[in-house]
Image (cartoon, rainbow, N blue to C red):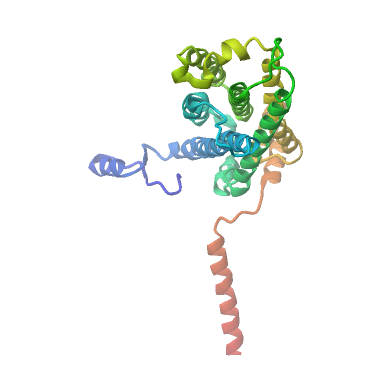
Length: 327
């Protein structure tokens, strides 16, 4: 984004004001450019890429759970969730943590961003927003949806749901799957965040708490409006220990694939910002030899200037052929 923006720097007077009004970003002095690019540029790129990847994840998890339920019901047209559950998923239960991620998340501190300027190369090389990364998050959403749906259906399909011996109906099963989806996507968000603030804690865990509050309030409305969600929480879900056990077990099981992949990548195939996180964690950020070793390990071939290098190579071949033709 910064590469395409018009930047006005250090121009005073009337011309300076015109430059500021016509530019996307204006700074007073050149010395501010370093922090703008290396710190805020890197953070901005990471936040935007993380938000979009997480957007793919949470919507694939939610949408695929609906599709699996339709296949489970032989495409009879019976909805998996209540209409208001469908409408409010992206409004109240999963959207606010994404906004907090885009505003507050920091993978490394400002001091480390300036000390290791190669971090900016992650944006130039598009390391965090490539198709491979997007498809990986989509596969993660697919795995989460499959785990949630089949664990919930197998846990509640045949055995008694409560002490009276009744099995779970469509409303109970749908509410349970929906609860697991809300828990899973918010736990996934908590695992993805590198820099926690009190606001992020409030929004992540508050989104889960608001889902239970919504079930209480919505279930208290007349059945003509709440339909199959009428008192589903206070009379069916809350008194059943199996509901709470299934919710906890399924929600944490659904994030195991991502947690395992992240642990393997962090230990054996770390990216440059993860190497810096290790440096800070081990207290070796002031060791010049160790930092230089990390810099050398992070150097990867990139496509920056590929066109210029290709043209230069072509010109050299043309000059060589021209010289041979003269002789």
